[in-house]
Image (tube, rainbow, N blue to C red):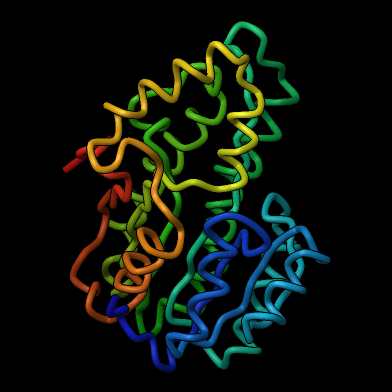
Length: 254
């Protein structure tokens, strides 16, 4: 498989201690990128970054002072910024009628507010010479997802925010696109573990038709990393405001 090279690209990746963020942190240095991984999990994040040849900085994406300090330190380490990939997020399960105010604030603060704060912090570095922002949305935020209503709402907010700043920040040659993945990750393993046996069996049966290619979620290394490499490259500079569905044909969004 031929991957897009990222020689010299200065990239910040949030959520780098697990899942898809981890996959990017592990892969991108090998493609020539200079990478700083940001995550709340210091132990896991620093170990992964060290193994990959990246740099790690701890951050709480829901806290403005933490985000501003972490992004500033990352940019100082990189000597500038070309790409922000904001992959950090959580997806707790809860039936809509059982949602609590505390759960709403927790998910919205990490997923939606975290997107705004990281994007704003990156904007300051990108506005002079342009660059790329890739935010993570979800099919849940477009079609809804039973048992994940707060998560779906937070990703709907991410989508609306991203499309708005794609318009506002285009004058600075900053592109903003949304990654909508259906990739097998530890978060998905957790989701599966929360399903009763009969629900899980039904879920797996539904997946066979829901994902036209293969009938199951994609692989990080072979299905996800190559797409993100391209969208982190100068070759994607004329695309903005788009939902990029890496999902085997599940969403088929324009």
